[in-house]
Image 1: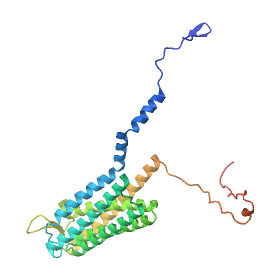
Image 2: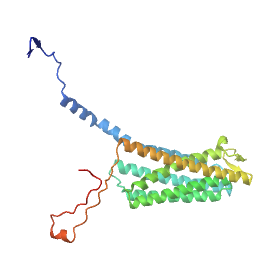
Image 3: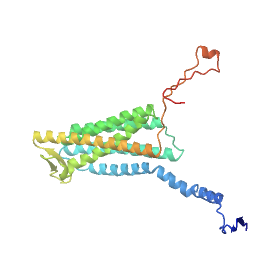
Length: 298
């Protein structure tokens, strides 16, 4: 043991334990993180959204197909028309389900390559088909309140279709990508509000009432008898839609702020692009024209 002598006192370092092998620890950590189990967990977390989307679409398809066999007293033509319109909605949902499965297969395997422009083009066609279905359903409704809900849903689907067309042409356009996510979120919130306004007594506007089917007593909808009640209910739905839009915008701003705080945002300075070689610069290839910097200190 090495003994240090300082003046009249001596100092001997304490006995240290066995040194930590950092290289061995790092190697063990790398082996654990690169193991097949960890890689599988990371892959599952990456495609968790697609799995949840497929599950929700499957549940919605089963529900819409089951509902199509009930009768609706507020649809023109009663049961036959309601049956075919409900099957049409179920068909659109099934097409979205196929598109989601195709995207999952394309992302996880190499069996079915699916480029982004083709994906967004197909999604645009499906959103336009959903817009057509919602518009047709709104025109067949005898309930003005339910027709209003279907028309707003059709408008959101049309906006989503246009955004998908833009992303098909420019897949890396950030603004269109964010707007598409916001429109899908708005569509889900409006579907929730439609169900509350039509089938939940606590959320039905004043002056309107839920009409039950006389035959089966299962399917029902909401109808406003007086003209003033109908206009008031329509105005309330318009106000709720604006509130949902503000809520989605707020979610978007908060999400972007948190992402920028955690991950960081690439910021560009005030520099301008260097001009191309022309004129005198062609004669002297070693000369590069620079732009003077303003507002800087030496």
